[in-house]
Length: 251
Length: 316
Image 1 (cartoon, rainbow over the protein chains, first blue to last red):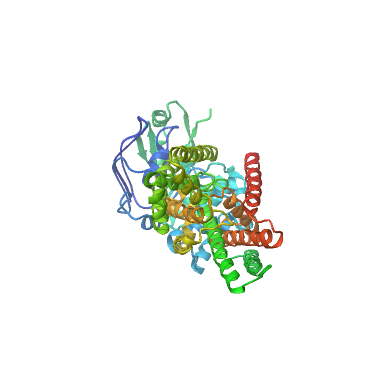
Image 2 (image 1 turned 60 degrees about the vertical axis):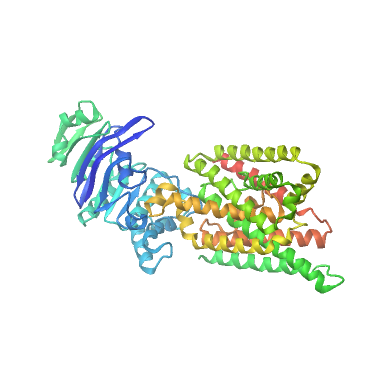
């Protein structure tokens, strides 16, 4: 369970998050949606203790994020920010191997190697495993980074715009894989830009706007013209396509 | 470890041994015991400098997330020289000369440690790009050199002579009185860096991914910067400032082993350093009779490498 209590964040005088309180149950896939500047990424990085907490409290699985030793938290929670410009001369296999760092402190055991190999395979990266990360395309790099995060084998997985740079096929692949991980018991929180991806794969959607939570609920509850208008600030049609709500946000 | 990495490391170790043998054995004349002792002391100093420069450069580059900057380019050795000058200025030539050299070394290193952390932590936290870091490094270097120059103008001639004596160490005139303490500091600092080699790999990913993988980025960065400053103090105290040696050594080592994994890169860089310093000195001094030229040759080659890296980085 991720518990967020009265979290506010101010940066350079601007209010990024305004008294957000939110409880996400263990298990399932949660999508964070909202317009640019709504505070989605900031909220995610606060949960992942990438930024210091200014006010309020956040705990993941009962561990307060600002008081728990880094390594203990890294075995509970894995995070991927938007493109963290990867260091050079690093092979794909080595990058994914870093996901095992919290478990083995860099000395990969045979068990770690097995996890790395399985994850590489899962993400279609086995043919690329000896390539240097800087020689990959944006989408391939994104897959390698996600694979590293998954190889960390944590119960909680936080992803900031994981679909960035991915073409339609790999975007769909990734959402399906995240769905499968969630079905297997992991708790996933992902910032998504495409509400239709969120509607199709998430168990619940949390909508933010101007640093506040505007709505939270199952996709069917959120995917209405009224709520989407309240979140994104314009009217879009929502149609029912074979039992799934779909927003025609581009029209 | 890949086969290629093992082969490269083994050949480098072989080359380093050959260089050592050449340094000790070439043109040996006169009283053998005396000559060997003299050369042995200098060999030890050169090896210490090579290891200290290699380890500090690799660590600094990883923590600052770039491959162009080195402690020396960022003005750390100018900072050390400034500390020396300030000490003479404060104590006077007599007070400076009557101080135990080891005590002086300890004092100067501590001063430098404090100042390096005070200066570089804010820079690091601001996560500036390489260009800005480079610019601030150049400015800091000029600042410390100018401050030293100012102090030198203010002191009396005897103190001036003391400053000259303290700051004109070179590859030919190593400060052998500091060898023992320099050796201890180097071994301890390098051991600490070696223990952190896997953490360094993760730190190279950047602050956010490293935090996500459970490292306390800030604490690691402070500790590693402190170790870097200590190692720079060692090499600057022994042979004076060498600006481009670290950059050169690490760039060559990285090309040879073709990885940034610290378990491989650290020993490779140290070995390349030994080969270049000890081998170069053996060749120049005993082979070609060009004493005193090693510093110039190393700086020239290092400067060329620096320009090449800058240009290739700008192209990307």
